[in-house]
Amino acid sequence: MAVAPAFTKLAPAALAFALLLIAWELYARLGGIASTVLPAPSRVLAQAFENRAALADNTLPTIRATLAGFACSLVAAFILSALVDFFAPLRRALFPLLIASQTLPLVAIAPLVVLWFGFGLLPKILLVALVTFFPMMVALVEGYAATAREISQMLAAMGAGPWRIFFLARLPSALPYFFAGLRISITYAVVGAIFAEYAGAAKGLGIYMLSAKNNFRPDLVLAAVAVSSVLTLTLFGLAVLVQRLAMPWENTKGERHDGDKPSRDARQ
Amino acid sequence: MTRLELRDVRKNFGELEVLAGISLDVGAGEFVSILGPSGAGKSTLFHLLTGALKGEGEMRFDGAPLDGARFAFMPQRDALMPWRRVIDNATLGLEVQGMKRRAARERVAPLFAEFGLDGFERAWPAELSGGMRQRAALLRTVVQQRDMLLLDEPFGALDALTRAAMQRWLETMWRNHRWTALLITHDVREAVLLSDRIYVLSARPARVVREVAVPLPRPRTESAALARKAAAIEAGILDILLGTADPISRPSDGENR
Image 1 (cartoon, each protein chain N blue to C red):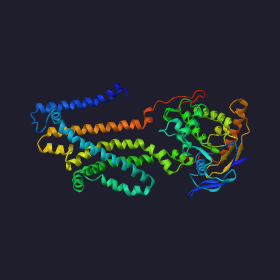
Image 2: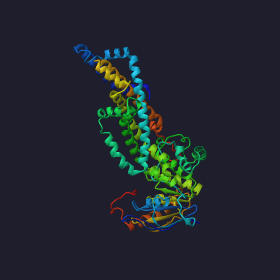
Image 3: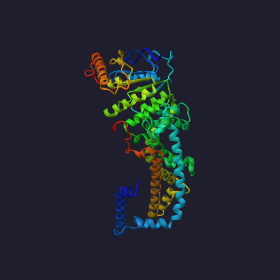
Image 4: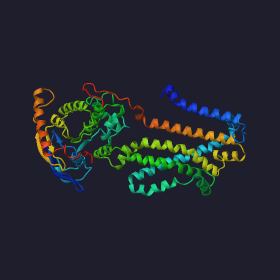
């Protein structure tokens, strides 16, 4: 993507964001609001810088929990979706359970998971997986089903078995669906990890936010929030990047050649 | 020499009788078409041949019961995989047969020029025009080196001009290679231009209402005299088709059911 179009595309969002920050800054300074209630963005930034060591120290465990949980979720989504694709009855058995799992309120379940599995990495992995698994699973299963029938029939006529057809046709057909699901679930991942830490952890952005709140330091809470937002946006950007690399054929749409030299082959 | 031989092949979908006893044969190096109205069950017949469906009746190849791996099948629409480059689409059948991708590419690459795809080996299917996509699909079909080609309305999705160009091109290709081929179409001109013989099917339930030989020399697009003879055969076939069933008064139903 060229720099100029990217800039034009991002400019409105950046402008809106800047205006919001300015309005907030002005309100916090001129409205006579105590900084222990609503700190100005400038103060949040300054305090974030001052406490950068502590913030970084608490960000690393969150990143670790997010990535580990997301990786587990990804692997589980692939394996289970493939199983469901091969054994249709499994879908009817599993999907109600999975949908029910999405109705669990995280605030209630997070302390329980910590109670059961302690303060280590495991409960965080489980909670991240709980919130990120479903969108990817659904996207994959629907994606397999979206395989063009002609392609499956042709492969079968070529003599390909179900496994060959799965890897040659169904899995690649599901890629666009998978990345749509990935973009949704990756935005939940950091939040899931923070929730888990909030319920109990030695270190992490969640526990950092909790203690900052208890110490009447909303500026540090917001600083941690800003860090978690940056984390999520980075992961989202990475997902988009991976999608571009994994699906190079999507980047060439609309650049058809008309290479029909001798025949007067019109465009479709 | 007869290669493919069908005797009284029938297929029902529940109550719905689709094929009511089809008998036909295709000789070595012969181009045969199956021509019939939309919804007659032509594609069902192909799915019986490729083994995707099971029916009743006798299907023989070179005298032995049909075992499935005889045909290279070209489906309606091109069925190119958008995530594979053109050359990797062309090698697909060979890879399924177990050939290494590299060897398959070496086998396929020299054919690109003949198929009018020179220089597009590394292109994505989305970058090709409709006619080129169809040629790539035919390339993928013929490199499998099966005994016989099954072409299921290969040009049905193309616009009229592209289709006419592709028909001429296919005739030229066939004259060079003399593939044994069975073509499904509902395009009378296409059938007459390409075929040695044409089986005309009735509306559903399909049976063979006429076998029409096309004794015209090739190439068939060269002279006006030939075009007049071809037109006479076309008119005769249209009379058969429109006489057996009036397709206008029938409720329209899709071919892909």
